[in-house]
Length: 372
Image (cartoon, rainbow, N blue to C red; front, side):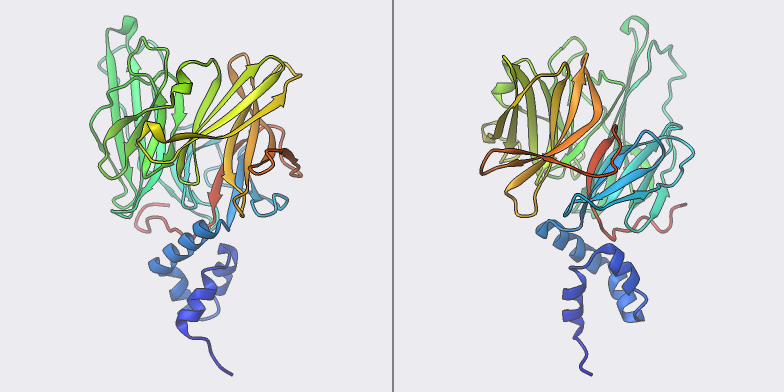
């Protein structure tokens, strides 16, 4: 019987799912070695991203577990239980198949849902002993991959104010998966007003909405370059300066994406802007705009998640805003870029309330020398 060449075998294996690859490691020592090889892990991940395959939606419920929804069909669902399930968990970020999670005890850990591997991060304290804190500190997180150093990094920014603003404490730290340790970096030059915010990754930088001064009511977009580890402001389109609306910033297709939702008479308008050239204000382009009839008391908030496999549709999660609070959950819809029509997506067995993230199934490993 003729045997396949090693190169042809790798070519076939790179198109398979992680679930199949983990099973095929038992075929032979050579296959096991090849699938565990760092080169193949990157090759498989790159193929998944380029072909828009092996993606899933992960829905965090109010409880202690998650629901995984296959992105190709949006029908196949599976309950997956993360580690450390003795406390409610939130998702800090998703990158290359790794999720950064935090529980109510402030334990942070990384988790690959596809391989079921996890790693607890070393704890890092904040020194508030020298002052009286008038309110809970603001803590912002972000998680991403830096390709030059081939390292996954988690950023944590903390700010707190004393009574009558007589004391101000600011601290920024970066965790490196490669070194498995935290280190302090240059303090931020902007203000964090919300209790807890989670950043998102685009163009090798993490991004958050912040305030330039404590007195400012206007939010600004700031990016943290994972390579240089420096902060810089990113200008928003002028549209954002003259409309009253809810808006959010995400990443879609690797680019910065701004979604604005506002009222016009009896309709709710959803506009989506994409920054085609990172850091260039003039490159913001309004790529989507649709009117949704509005006959309920809540205001819908549309969040784009990803393009369809063929690139002609965009999947949105529609949550609802009530009394200035964004309510979790809602529904999913497809927006057809050609016909400009909106189509409801029915996913069975999903909870009525959830947070949602898009992630790609991958073999990306965690630090084998770190405590699990």
